[in-house]
Length: 238
Image 1 (cartoon, rainbow, N blue to C red):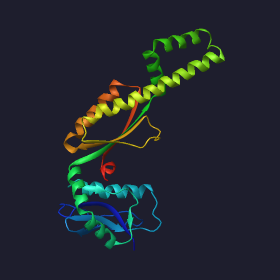
Image 2 (cartoon, rainbow, N blue to C red):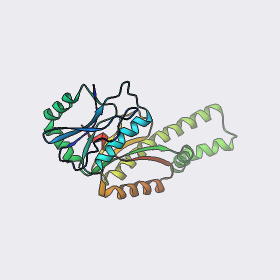
Image 3 (cartoon, one colour):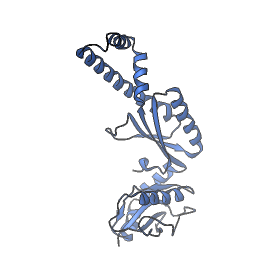
Image 4 (cartoon, rainbow, N blue to C red):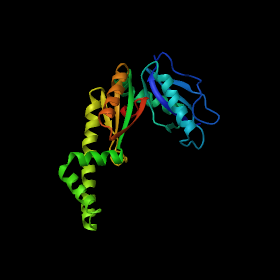
């Protein structure tokens, strides 16, 4: 039977959640495979596994339970190995690399921050920031909306101004938060957000990170910030 892999820890980890319910319906029991100085949290792999909410939560719960007591390298949902022997062989082959990553991620969590604009608020912001654009908008309004060409020209300039603001705000979000973090990983472009960034944060500095995030939101109400965390450091496992 194939083996589902949740994460990798040191074999000396003080509290690996063996026999905890994992993915599958009914839940497959979590077990621990060891090789040298490493251990893998695994279970039997269910057939036809799909990213359903229950299984996604089960995967994260196993990692959260293990991560509360020590460093764990989280595998992304859906990691399946041919069998237990293949897992232990991989632990042996890459022991030095996994141990280095465990040292680097010890006592750290991930916060993912996504940023977007409140459309009405950012429109007011770009008009307030650009007197010429504001004057053009007011002239169109005074003329009953303006001609088609005037409306088109204004619309194009507003879109360009909002795009520029998106780029500046993406930099603002990262620069404001990165000094509270130990690492930063932007998501691939094309995510649909003006910013989609993962931050690696020391557990002891988590409150300071969240406070900085809240202060950023208060100071820039045209920003809509969505934060997910603390999470296992998925984005920082190589």
